[in-house]
Image (cartoon, rainbow, N blue to C red; front, side, top):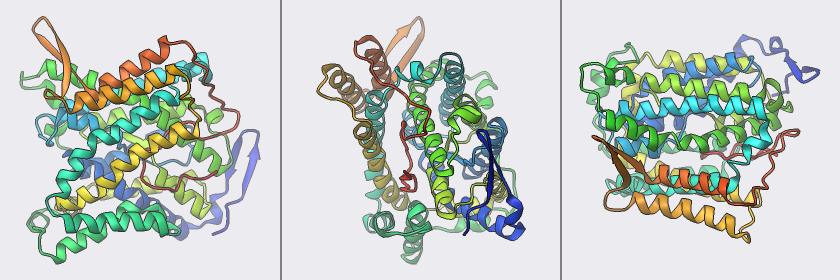
Length: 457
């Protein structure tokens, strides 16, 4: 497909979408929906959140992001994998009564984006990024994948042959796939393993038959607002959720910066300067807060959709907004959500086994590509404390550390403890020489997507 003509005016580019025509615009919108779908619905399946609510707020979050970023950035916002550790720390088995508390912590994390955006606007990117260099964010990402690995293996153990089908398809698509096949390995792995499970007769389709064709995607009992009604609010759990989940946002904000850099490199326009990181961070953060308040996963800009931009060379943001509208429409079909929700645990296990390993590998890649100097003792100490505290506390007898203030007991997960200690040690120890250059877009952050569509430079 030919590249859409664009007229550069200073730092802006005006896309002439009229050359596409309605039919092609429709097809391209579906293609972006297809690209984000596998990863986006996997997060609610892993956490116990609603698939319908997830699709609704992926669409609404994308539209909100486009509005705040002046409708210039062709980015789709789907479910974030980075917060999986936070959900599982608060609601390890997807307990419906505990998930709203986890969502409360994620909603607060979205507001942290606004604070960082204000710092970027006031002090400049280079001064702020000294507190979040790759020697901090890289080990945090490595630890996220490793702490999740146990749940992946446990799901695989329910039926290893079905799990292996998913693993083989994902690996094959990533290594030998071309075009769209390489961009959507998760979706193809899910479909292949799902079909194998259906043929083997281990899926109960009764919930699909009983689900209505149309229904509302939001249920009050699953929202954060439900915590504060009925007089049974668990205040200690609210506070624990904040201290457990909010530190994860430091890694996801760096992921966001890397995503915007990748999109800028793809399109050929420096979105870091215009509309600016302060706007894109605000859009991503507010979309995450909005989604979480209503019981959906945190949002993040999606590597799969950046891969579609590279493949089609069509950069019109209106195509992305069309995909967002399609996601919203699908969210009102409970029968469609039920088809996804009856997916066997082994399929989820096979996908997540690769995914969690890829998350850790991306953390390693982040450290290597940014040339973190481990001959410096201060860098070794920062990375060592993050990894050992995170993994050690997670798999300790209690699974957390905490203290009691009055009648309130506050607990810190391993990831929260490791992240906070790492950020603090990096700030205290001498030698903060990391420089964030934003004159030319580059991969300065991390990418928590399994898709390899973002190797763009």
